[in-house]
Length: 72
Image (cartoon, rainbow, N blue to C red):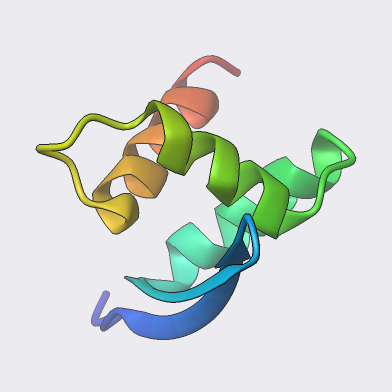
């Protein structure tokens, strides 16, 4: 259980950004995007739009993944 966050590039509404997540979160995020038949960039952009100013994008993605997995 020593998964360090890994940085990946995403494109959100034409803007490139980097997000650092652990491999397990990247895997789950990709799985959710695939289940929803959506591109990972589109899903990340939606999360970015609804997150609060006090929450970073990486944290918002982790919370999104956690909530989806709990809802199963």
